[in-house]
Image (cartoon, rainbow, N blue to C red):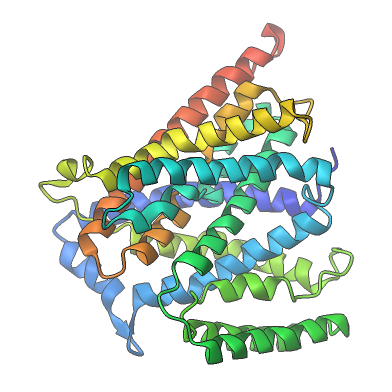
Length: 387
């Protein structure tokens, strides 16, 4: 299977980012529950221009993260795993199953309650963490499995973005939204005119972000929309899309996502945090990520392969698909992001949800790693076994 240099770079940066995110999360949790708690929390709530530092990170810097996701999705659609329907169908179907089943499980416990808005929380997959765990298995991981997980996670993120845009918009300013889309239309014209200069797209991107921020639709959506009006061309190293994606990998992986982790995992474990895990919201998140993800990914994939709609890559087997579904249960970044939107101004619900997400993601990652390690080792002959 031919893999582009950019995909290899994407995988390498994402797996390294996963390790950095783990370290940042541990640091944040330790500081938030130490004698430095008050000072540490003050850092993230310090006001800059009428907004807190954490607000600028979540609504500003994370837009760049979504821009990178959009650029990666665009590349996958044009020349990557999603460019051929027969290759794209399996990860698309797996991702759909991995979103619907967790949301369904969550709603079983929370429908009709004040926390039902959190249904989108267990639908998400954290690409960085998932690929970070997969990287721990080294060269024994088949290339097709890496590509499958990456494509599934990217599609999953697209689904999460749509959920954010549709279900987590409290109010809508048609004027601001219209201006944002109007700027996008102008950039699209530049694209068709083959304007291959970064400057108009960067300036236009800032404009889209500002008006999207004031439209009621979450500002990060501007990042995804911007990605699809940046000229892709033939996808070569000479194109704006390639160079922008290449340029953003390191800042996103080693600055933006770590900052997001530090700012949003400053969770204080009170005396009753264990009791909070018995809340229907926590149960829905935990079962949605740990159980719903692998069941949804496996069940939808198996059914549609049996129906002949898509096919399983030759290098993969059903045990590996199930194990990959477990890794998809690492929600972390996107799950926390959706939590902040679902439970605005509900500090207790946010804290309880974050704790559930952290525990569920850790559990899903451990199960997925252990399961894959066993299945991949079993597949090797004794003479070729790698430890």
